[in-house]
Image (cartoon, rainbow, N blue to C red):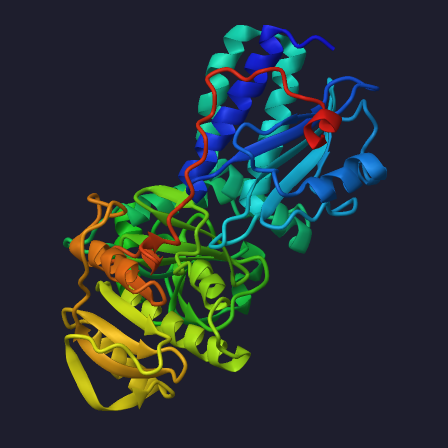
Length: 476
């Protein structure tokens, strides 16, 4: 099959719009596509940044050696999609996928990264669904003028992806006949999050309950019907949140008005926005859907990403119990720093005997085996300098320790002194691991003078895609 310029431009436009939108929603992301436009054609692979590399055995099994990929496919004349719930899952670790058929395109399977801090893949799948639909439209219409708007549509998908995910999940749980207007709720959440009150940003829980289930709540106080603030009055709702700020109480809405204040469990199908200053989290039935900050929805659960630390500890000569105990300790110290918004550094020392460092030593190393001692260690982390921890014994051996070392080419001048000191220190002491927590939430894991948690640098996406190879050619 000869791929004309419009075909290649459609592939590039949809894929680049999807990638840019997901980068804003989830952080650095890659996308890939396996597709066939017409019946009987060979499947082709579009993977400009190598997202699918390393998954060749499973792709060969799924698409070539068996007919698994055809399981659950709808009739070619139907405009519909499937996300591996109706067929066997493709099962590529670390990836979110969605495939299906749309009129004019025999088959598509879209892929993107499943980030470690993803709240839920639901919104991302809705994004892939839009990409599937947009590509089918572009290839069928052959209207090159319409391509100009596709990238913008794909980039601005975040509120719609979150909306569609919530609507789908609530319909699955409650049925399609629900009265909560999710689009208005999402708009109100963003407006409230951007509305300060006497210089302070919103804090507290705002719950949205299906009107037919409002009577199931345990109310502390209800407002008269004639005096209930409307949800779109963000300034008024922001003031009402003061009544539940820094408590477990809930400000309750039916999606149109503020009903009152309550506490306890919410009925099934309820949404709850937790405002926490400049950011917040959105939950459906207690499970995180997404977070929000700076007037936008994001996929992150806002928990520190310590996957690289977990992987690095696997290389150390620790038994399973020691490794688990140390990781739990570091996680709690990192969480304390994030909650209280201070920067610090943790030196994980596997040596026996331990390194001698400049700083405050302890007469006897303190075991980090209780909440009280962990809280003390978290307090000592606020003092300038790093905590010195014995990795094998899970003990605090010193605080306010200085990290020094000669300059080397791997430093990052865009980062601060604590970060670069840790790079120099681990370059001079390659067996150590240093965890650096910045006051604005990023966590870096250093070893051998390298930031292990730094996002990889991928090859840039070309300005125009070349004709994609067939799956057989790509697999070699």
